[in-house]
Image 1 (cartoon, rainbow over the protein chains, first blue to last red):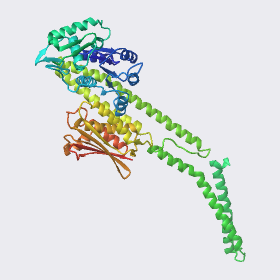
Image 2 (image 1 turned 90 degrees about the vertical axis):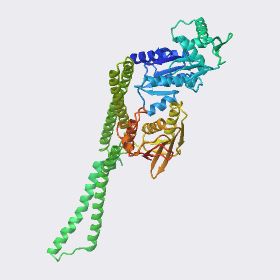
Image 3 (image 1 turned 90 degrees about the horizontal axis):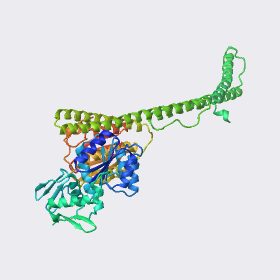
Image 4 (image 1 turned 45 degrees about the horizontal axis):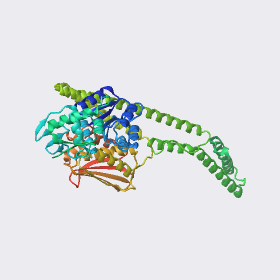
Length: 219
Length: 328
């Protein structure tokens, strides 16, 4: 799962980036509206944490632009301006959730998880596939009740596949959603992660559709 | 006939007629006194009658002209009261050419004052908003301290951050209200405001299976700017959504010239002894739902500003009913 953090305050941006990375997300950071616009249009994000008071292009304008351009990723607006009038304006411009500063990081993580889950059509907080259970709240993966230890990248690959259930996910799509920007992306590494996941979870857990991609296999 | 609109000419003309009226009256009085001392002199009744009518006409014309000359001042005073009470933004209408410059000066004074107020409010808003990001940073540091096992430090920082946040929110809402309270004669369409809020809340509370029912006729208006209606109803609806188990209802009724908006939830409700307490500034009925309590204090203050009232009752559907009455 890959998240864009658009926040201009350096300390807050650092805290957000760190916490989100620790929670298992691939995180990109934009310190101003132009950069956020560029990243939002060029890259594929599973969610965006957007500060409204960004320099160069303000958050609301950015949000409207993205929605007009057909970008549908969930956006959590983070702002100091939190009167109800402004909240209505934010939601009507295309925001999916609204949090006022100062906020609790735990709450932000919970809401972000819920947004990502909803946007990929999942209802339960826990993601299940046969005997395999992934809990985004704790970042733990269990198979038949036993915990499976995964590295950050493996977790992201599995999480993305499980969020999309039985849908086929192409290798390119996976690559786009597990790395943050500037990471050396080699599509072969995805194959490596899939191979490692299969070793840990059993060969039949992830199905390969030749030339098209991967999907979870419940049996 | 431009000279007739002149204050000076009206006074002069009034004085002229008044004096003209006084002459026959003086003459008649003189004659009467004279007649008594010298009874032989004849007083012509017809001539006396005519001059009396003439005198009365002149005196009346004089009084009316002076009154007409002074009436712009009464009008001016009425308009100034209107400006003070907020029913009109400026002094309007045409005044005698001597008074018009005064009206112009008064209007520019009002404009200047309004500009100053707006700027001060914008500054206060910027200050409050500017404080929120550093507060967010501090709050995160407190969480970090907590993670690093520095419980005491974390507790102190979070407590102070929370206190500052509440102060900022409370005074910010007040500054906003004070700013919009000066916009006179504003009316807000209740349904439009409610629909926006419900859209927003449905999105924010999308995770839970919460139903928000709206029963607001489309011809209900309240005498209050939209931003403040949204602030009041937003806080009430948000509270209801936090506590409801599955349904929130918002209903609007007309009572005499007022509009009464009821916000109901089917949650646990609130003990009667707590109802007045939560409307007090900064008191929270329960720490479990974040941010409650202060929201209601803001609603109460805003309602009072617009000559409205807020009360809490037992809801017919089980939980709490917030009843907001605003002039329609």
